[in-house]
Amino acid sequence: MELFQEKNPTSAHIKPEQTTVQFIKELFFFAFLAFLIVIPIRMFIAKPFLVDGPSMNPTFATSQYLIVDELSYQFQSPVRGEVVVFKYPKDKKKSFIKRIIGLPGETIIIQPDKFVIINALHPEGFSIVEPYITGPVTYRESAITTLGDDEYFVMGDNRDQSFDSRSWGPVKESLIVGRPILRLFPFDKIGLFPGRSENQVEVGT
Image (cartoon, rainbow, N blue to C red; front, top):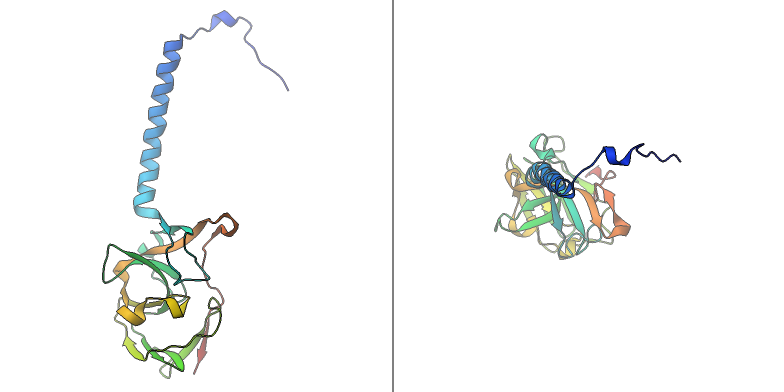
């Protein structure tokens, strides 16, 4: 390792007050730069959310800290199987996290012994294999819901303890805030695109 020293240490002299002033100027500059970068990201691109409640167990648990991408859905629509954060239709001050099950224009049929989706490609209906659900699911309610052109049917992964579209209806696309792109806490579960299901399978009836 080489150490570089001035041949004449007295040839470059900076007064202490000049150093302090320069430091303060640089501090304000970097603070302003951070403000210009962080605030737009915080407001329009990504937003932190804290999970509260058991409706998405085991995919997401209470107190898990998520960063939600608010930009992607400005250029593309949500797809079946994605986890989304949205404004609760009955009280837009609240935000919920659920998984998209039904897409615009589809009909959702729920009965105690079956769960079927009908669309143009599957007029006879189809069901989906959901690997993110652990244990058997029994639907106690019976309902038929036909979604509008801008509506999605959402449910929690913990079906027995989820307050979702089965209770209060579909979610309009305009209420969808974004999708989780990063889980920051707990540290042993840090990862990109948490909750993403690449193994969801459609099965004809």
